[in-house]
Length: 261
Image (cartoon, rainbow, N blue to C red):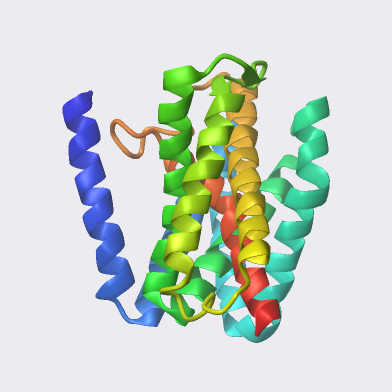
């Protein structure tokens, strides 16, 4: 298992960097559509759809991305705003009270994946380095939470959803993201000149969103009775397992940068 995990990780990193820095913007956008389509196929599986249902939902998400791509100036901000409103206003209540996907499950999956694709495309258009830096923020949060949780985790964050997560892990994620974000922001033209207090507040919000995104997918997988969203990535589960926290953070960052001009 460890060997498969390492080999898959190496291929993922090499492929991701190649998409970011070697492909033209249109090629990278198409690659991001593929990620959204695969995520949609997995999401439909979590909704207990059959092969036909999974294929149809994946096609719907793919076509939606292409339609939005035809008018990005209009569609992208609307998608980012809808996603940010969903994660900020709806998701915390669902996590607190519990939510079982019914017919609305596919609409939720669409709202997770299409705005995330739009954020990937929009941030990449601003610069591959910016997109990489934003995605790395989520990775820093995950790594810091894992090690701080293992070292001193005592108080469970959401035992009914993800028993391994602790408040100590959250604290570690906050410290890690603040340190990373403040260090990196000065090197990014899009964030250069932003005052320290607003930047720290935004980083705290992104940390909260990344944790909420992770918890939400954990809740859906628990309800579906599976450990991973699929086995597409040996040793790593599925595409959704790799982008769960990105679905909640990328649209928020893209929307914020859009509003800042």
